[in-house]
Length: 543
Image 1 (tube, rainbow, N blue to C red):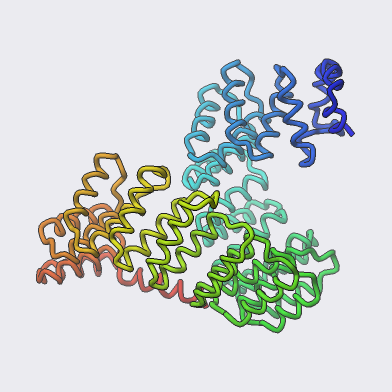
Image 2: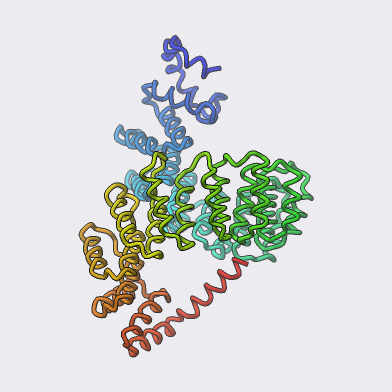
């Protein structure tokens, strides 16, 4: 094997021979491609680091290798070196670096590459344009994705699928279906990915009729049912038609994989078809993924009985060493109100990650035991756990302290985050800490913190203004409360909750004219109806 060959010292003598054959080594038709095999990924990086590559195919191969092994920063650095050395921007180069940009912390990297393509006049073919579209989509920039798509002269099924995914990522299922209708109008051939995306949109809209029609298309087109079978099971489970999901599963002649079965088990639990779920689990050797999926459904329904049954199965199968499974077990017990059971799971975990600690802290906080939440947080940061808190951890602690009136502990948590973990602090943490201070009657400290935020350049969001207004309402701070109300409604004038908060503030200080004026504006904007519609939508999706 080549991996054992490279590991030997004398193999370095053969490197010049390998270097001389780089063009063949990097050819897409070559049978050995180190980037294509996950098992040889380390070897590929080792060879790349040894070779003084200057030719474009080698550099592109290295770039692709970095992207596939999730070394996005290395991929970006290599691309920058290639650009500085005036290497030509091939389609291979651009698609690889755009894929890396999708996973980098900010969309500015992708914008730079897009701008570079325009500035240099490099003609982006359909593959590169689709990569740009996909990059904007994964960065959450829907408008940019749509603009790129509209500017494409030629569109293949991959480009259409990318646009479909863009709308689905933003939760715009109806718009995604409109894209599908447009594909039909353009007589574009559907791929398995297209039909899977449409089924997801149908599930999001709970559109049984359209989903059934898509099922008919799947049957007529005779496509790969191993992929589409799982999508159909997901769809029927989402709309509450477990019998149809079971029919799909039992009627498949193709090989049924664990993913499909896991989806079916999860659907049975979500729809409270516990006998079917347990029957399916008894016919297979449940893996951690299957049990995790089922427990997710238990958490959604707060179904303690079936959750305990699945917990027993996980113990019998020896799966309790799986951190992800234990995390969802903890969450399930917490949502069912069983704090002691959640703590038992937490204490028995072999490997606790930041999700484990944050979930247990949040469990104590949501059940009114802020002191235990803070004590657990102290154990996490002061003990030898090897786990660092993240933004969710700090938010959970601050929320717990606020609801339990633990001002000193809240201050300790906030200033620890500010001194040692400043990257974890966002506007939502400031809003939460303002709430802690406001509930404790420390209105002057609230404004001191607010001015400190402005000095530090923290973005003042509507969430922060809402917290400030709430603090003023608690402490009858009329003048500054009116100022906060004005700022809140200026910053986010289309959210009914902000009007309700401002209206309650004015009512608390006896300004009934202002209350009537705000209600008039709400009615004129139709905000009451909007909030009611959203509530109905949430209720239907929860059911």
